[in-house]
Image (tube, rainbow over all chains, first blue to last red; front, side):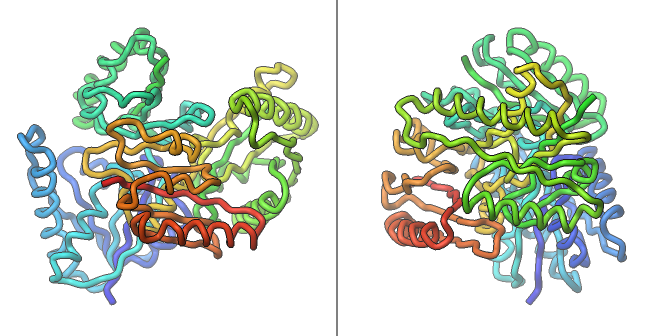
Length: 246
Length: 246
């Protein structure tokens, strides 16, 4: 039976890789790298750094060119669905051509706002190639954020919502005071009360890491400016934050 | 300056440890182990297994006996507060007596429903001993659960609430359909609609790992029975689950 590993490699620091991840990596013959542009180039560098450090034998690095995607679609769910289909087709083609165990190195952890697992399930559902697959958990960008700020995400006994910038703009559900926000290119925290505390981090675990914390009233504008500058300079940004409402 | 590491060791599998965690471990002279009873004994075994595997030099293992705690207090927050104070005092005493770098091996990740970081901050706030501290992120039991069930926690673009059994019983906030539940000794999922999907896991990453998935109508009772039996047999249980409402 053909085999595929989905390996969470952590949030940027090559040493976020787990022993389990290293073991899985060493069973893989060909790694598929999916992405595009500057972000892809840098992620390939980080992934190659991880592989070079922890994998001695020869391995194949197979680039899967990410299909284009409408970032402001009229129907968000439909568009994401279509895009996942195109990705699945491309992966199927490359995995079908590989002689051996396949691997997908996933940024952070495959269980949180990541589409790799859905793509793999689609490849299987298409029924063209058959394989078994295993998921290796990784350090999430959220754990990395919390570790660098040395914070606990939840207050004692209280819940914390993991959400997106888009959803934050629609307002937090009643009774939810603490939220971790991902996929926010619009600094949606500006819609919250100025007394809200924020712990923000960009390029977590990487040499360019930037951390800012305070109330939104104090540091909100600084995060917006800094984020725009960093993004312009590098061509991409990955950031996440925790907000805690009064 | 005296130094303390808080190291997330992952959710039970000794190979959940990260390279960063191993590096930190190798700088530590004395590891503090906090806990009590059967759970403590087994957690010490897992931690010792991790240390024996990844740490070659001699190290000290310093047991900190957990103070007793009222599990059904009239005021939950106050009781937890008092308990954290007692723990802080005990850690302060032990760390004060240690000649070298201290380490705390934290189950899962220090940022999620874990009191270690708060205890360390209390030791500092007491002002008796001074030190710097660093947090090393770990694989959460949530990532481990998702990996073993091969699921993504969130639906596309949707939020997911991380919460406790106690809070789940009070009802999920409006608009929240997906929730990860921790610290639930009462099988609070039974308060949800029978069509709700559940992915449950106990002793994740350990040899005794048990996974059950289905709708609450289909598997709810089985989880309750199994949980009670496992707990009785081992003397303790650690479990977590994702619920997805229709």
